[in-house]
Length: 218
Image (tube, rainbow, N blue to C red):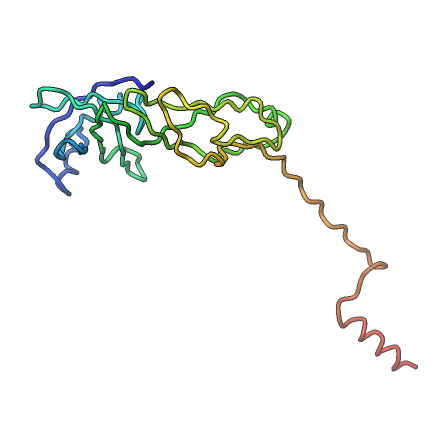
């Protein structure tokens, strides 16, 4: 079950390109929207959000979003975090206001635990899936879903069908989707043995030329 974290935000008037100026004030532009509220443009303290992300996960952590001027906090999840591709700092945040009484669809990270037996024997572990699509009520959202790989031998794999969903959670991915597998170690190809002069095979055309020369000498 997910836990709830608090975060404060302020309404902002600056939108579009002008919102980039907020970075100089230590603020991040954000937006909150949902089926039962009007979309609001916000600003969030950068340090507060960085601290929150040490505990929170995108899509699966409930956040009590206290917006200045509003009597009650909003129940939200972090829907998307846009980062600068080069520097990595947060450029924009999308919050989704959830209805605590209804189910929602989101994604949660897979936490692979254990050391695969096949990997210890020289195999190569391949992670084919890093997150799962789920459906659950907000109060039942897991922070992540653990997948134990310790029993996997070389040639083994785990699919979504091998998982037991947490209470209140429905897995939406195709059950046959492979999450993780252990591949056999790659075998290095041996270099071809070079043929010596005595066993040298003539290229196409050389044999005919040799025969023609022999006939000429006769």
